[in-house]
Length: 481
Image (cartoon, rainbow, N blue to C red; front, top):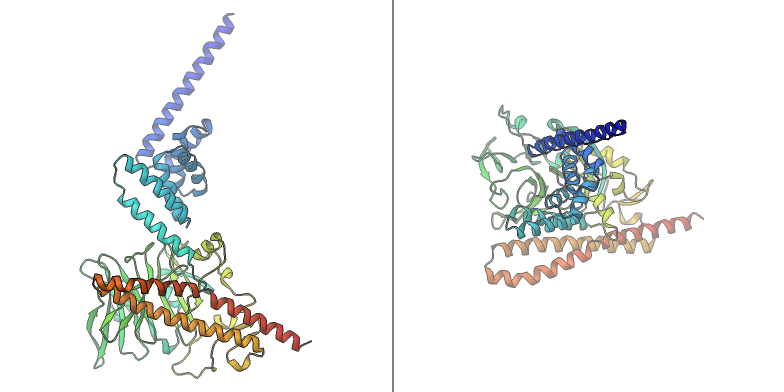
């Protein structure tokens, strides 16, 4: 009996001792958590959540620690439990997790739930309202992701990324600010010089230390007459950088972290209006050109029919990925695919997913790295119509099938119509921006109708090109039987 009593006393003591250690461990973990030392608090919460898997607070705390230390998959498991049990901060963390995973639709829902909870407590919701609106905007961009062909990519040191660009002489040149101006000051920018060598565009910090875009002309063999681009391009309080000008001399691509950027630098395009000496309202490019990371230095070489842009998405701090792509003037969108596929394409999960069936890009990749002198006579090209790995048409006479020719003519005409409609929209939007209220009310239905027509046409050229390709292949097969 005495022996039994001793065993009971020992057991009770052990339980009390364990309970005391657990409490001590919990208090320490909570203190570390409150101080933002998530990596140090994480092991304690991991142990606690295993001991008490149904404890709501343990699940939330461990989920937050996993999120803050980069274990996002594990974080989602435990934060989901917090969300189910209406833990307020679990919603915020889940919203951020979904946002950074490009699941913007889910992120917007989580932000809305979080805002609702804050509103009940009469707490400030404005920062999270902005995040929700940004998630909704990004979701629309995913749904309208452009169907571009990215044919190659290279990861390179950030301070050497311009070496991945090889422009033909007719496209002008790009160089670093330091090299062009022979400057010792640390200006992280580039300079674009046109093919005539009489105009440059570049960026440097203004008085508020934000980068602004400027242009200069060559006067008597010297650069001068520096002009700052207007405020609708140089958005106040933001960095505006990395300009490139098309050969038309009026279309300007650049990067900005303002003007509705979804993350870091985003790519924008504007056009100079010679008649009014002004720039049209900049248009933000869609995905996959833009992402939650920094996307910049978009260059289009019209002589080569190729383009480049840089992005530090999924890259170490000192690296950047330069993508080589085939420009699409019609800016066709991916239609008829699942949201998961569109999300993957928007993130550039795989460049191979962007390739057309049976396409062989070897020659184009070679051309991307070739030096093409100014005025070099190239093979006459009406277009570039890829039939299969070994056959590409460049002129109408090469198309053998009358049916294929008919489809391809419709494809080209529709692309032309889309381009004209896009330019019309640019002009309408510019007029709308400058108009008074009555003028805006008058223009609004016209712009909405033009936008509806524009987006309804975007997916059609690709379908017509596919029909043309299939018709030509079938025709050639019959000829060879």
